[in-house]
Length: 613
Image (cartoon, rainbow, N blue to C red; front, side, top):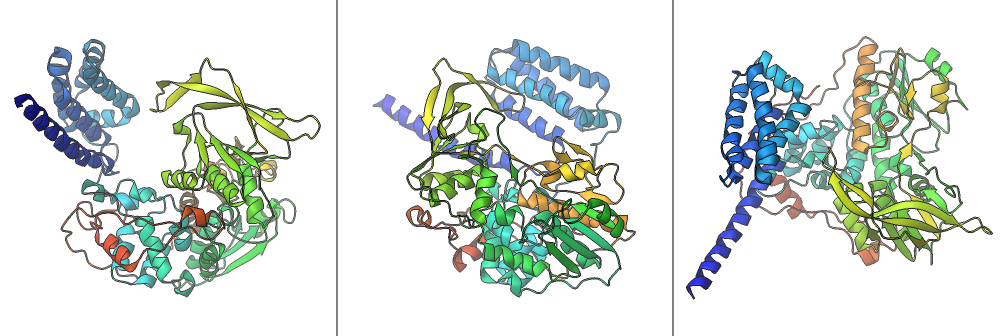
């Protein structure tokens, strides 16, 4: 009986410890993005010290000595001798500790010496960080476009829908589209995680645009006309964002796009069930009213207009051509008519092509968001089975919510399978199967990702009627490269200011520079380019935002559940391309907006250079 009581008491203690550790784990995910990396590594070291059992000297005493040396460096008392001593001490601990606690802790510090040598040298030589480290507002800093997130959440809380939308437009002219499809990196460091869970920032943006259409919200007044003309090649999120800000500054923006409708991959790459095209049009039709914007659709550079003419007739040029061409694998039978890149498949469906997959077995290689879009689209085209194959879980880079939704809609997933080749029928010329090699997991690489290697199992054959390749996209850069625009590995070469290397007055940004990325990254590039084009033309315009953000009140910090955006029943939504998400109720929206800690006033309260930068 006594033994049973002791076991029960120990079990209760372990359960309470698990609760405490889960709360502590949330602090790691909410580390402020502007902190000094040495402070971060020292805090990790101190956590390891607390895990030491104390049986071996290297771990028990050595880690404390490393922490003492770390403290001296951070206090501005460090020397090169101290830095060398810390490095040699960590090497000794890693080689002689009896267990993983000392080994991993020492190797973590050694990794920091490799990853941040400039920070260590700056602390030793200059007694400070490389840059002035300040605790920036996490959600604003993590948003590529630096939208004033706490501000528009506060406006939502006060039911000021139009002001919330215009505050978003201060940095991002696609409030509706981003409310539907943004990958919300702003939530990744939300300090609300310290208490419970990150605020549903994308959900609150969607809540705002669900209450009032962007078409009904007046735009900021444009500046007086400057007489300058800028040619923008590409009518996707990057090009249209650049046009929007240039127009507000008073310049004339002329947008050239080879398709018949604007929107780029927002229109032709994202399925309607995620982004209804009428919602995309809300944003596009609104931003086109920002100022002097001229649209020339169905116009391809190199065919209908020459790049040299654009250089001569315009004061500056912005290339935002995106990455809309799906990649094919350089293997035999990859050119079969029933083998199609995921991006091409989605564009065919978006253009209205009638594709019936009834009774078809679909195989998809790849695990990104585009691959998930293709898989879920195939489900809506009545495919009999859909199998997604990836080599390892790290290859599944799609949002967890997208993977979960795909599973709910009947998509099947298999990992630890390496794609080998495509088998084609000699008579029909169609792909009839794929060959896959089972894998086993190996050591982690230097980036912390699992590696794989072939297992001893034999390859096996998997039948398919349609093979979709979700293995990336590329830009159509041939015309530009022929005209002297620098291109490396299929990407236009431009710096952080979006200035094309060695090309006077030519700027570029978005997927054609970075490779396939997200809509918000393309929008951010268009914004950066607009301001730098303005400066190149000899101006220094600021797009004024007159929205007054409500004052902040202290939050009582009571743990509260996060409001999630619900989706229609999987059995219903897989039957059509109607929008899958269900609007938040007023109760959900207002409660979620009340969870914001207002880090723009409390805890951080700073943004480098202010909101205008």
